[in-house]
Image (tube, rainbow, N blue to C red; front, side):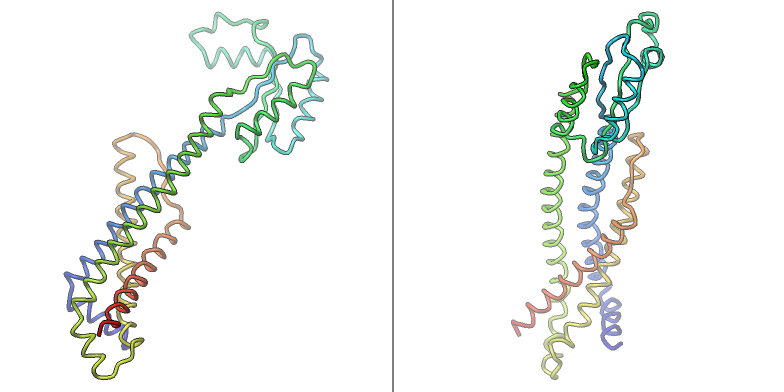
Length: 282
């Protein structure tokens, strides 16, 4: 209780420095959070595009429906396959006229063949897996051709990998800069109370007793800075949605709690390091 009271007194005694520390933590975490928000939305957009990956196997004309159905059931049992849809010539015609309305007069029932549309499960849409399924589907003697947008899938997978690696690298860089800035700010707060620490040491206070109020203060500043960073990120998200006219996603509860815990940990470790370094010099 005494340590908590001392920490609260320090807040009241140096409000400007406390606000500066909280603001620095908030803006450092906000920069990191804003990058994370952009990365999260890019990842979500790529996942939505990836869900459209499918294999379309065109069936030879006059193939018995029983044979097509049997092949569909076999393909559906592949561990990588989510579902298989049989598209008849009439269904293919209706879909083409719907998707390409301005060219609806060009198509007729004999123009488009029947097909097997194969959708893959999440995690099995990489080029290697797609090629594997395509090779298996081509083994059926009634399959005339298989289309799967090979170049498009390869580019999508490469873009996802690049985005992942760049996200991790830039995220670590932002985190490192945030920790350095926050550590320097907390150290300023500790140096401003160096005389108080020296007096406490002279009257026989232990290092643990001296550290405790600073740790509580750093923890509180980290929590407040994290809350402010989340608020700024939420406002930035709403602003971008309004001006760019797109529906983005925000951090879920798990990420929010992780952000608050990260702010608290940074404040705690920063205070502990700054106080410990100062204690070693006196």
